[in-house]
Image (tube, rainbow, N blue to C red; front, top):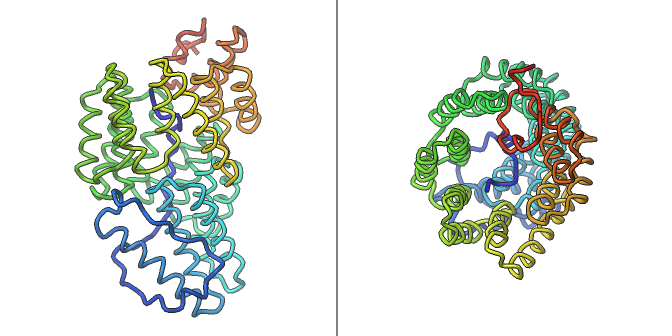
Length: 410
């Protein structure tokens, strides 16, 4: 039972300085055209981190109020919103907010080339997070014309090309990125590309380098270590995976994705009561739809029909909220209808819509293969299974589909 969200290596293109000074907020009452900073759950305030975020937000509002044609404060607000979306799970509030203030920055006639580059880079990052990959690619290409020597814009290009199924160009962009700046973000992308091509051991080594390059308490380091744990799970090393998740919780207390990952390990061992308790703990921290989906899987296994119906209704509301805020949730809907509801017609409808947008992506083809298999449309299932396996990616669940030609046989 894995998180339904596929791992998309979208590390926010930010330059937040969490050590910056507090700025007086006397003029912020005049600012009415920017989204609010939502209060964090006390469990994820992470010491002075939350205080510093509030100070940065207040300083940006004050500068917008006092400066004509301000650009930098809007960019700083976008960085805050992107960071808070990742930490709090409030994607529906923060990603549209980030896009709003970035458009305000880009509309200022006096914007400098560097500011425009940074605004476009952040905008590409948000579009990736909202699964609008074609738009993200176009924005990242626009940004790179302004600065070809920034590693992070190559990261956005890697992510966009991966999601659109253009793996050759993704590799080229990753090579450029790591030449410019070998760090957590570039090593993470190398890891993902190795995983896509079936090299799990190589992916683990690259992700270990990513973790070593990060600061232990940072959210990005926690996410990299989480991904490292998932790679260990794929390599059938659950003890090593658990060690990574426990390490995260020592370095960044109450990190909800690590709590949910431990729940997944308990689920796999058949310890459903322990898994359920851990998932409820994660849900109390942030409203992440994937945690609700994991909990629904437990209800389904235990045939708790009323609870399953109730939580599916909650999931549907959460997905709809994401859609209303501009998030493309086609694959998430397809997975829900496939696994939890066993409604293969609706699953196919969503998966087919996503296939029309990115027919070369291996995850989209994997989804279609599984759906067609359930519908006993064997020829179509095999065709999409072959497309899903064209890079050598390891999809054990496709083994149930008859006669897909393996990567080694091609």
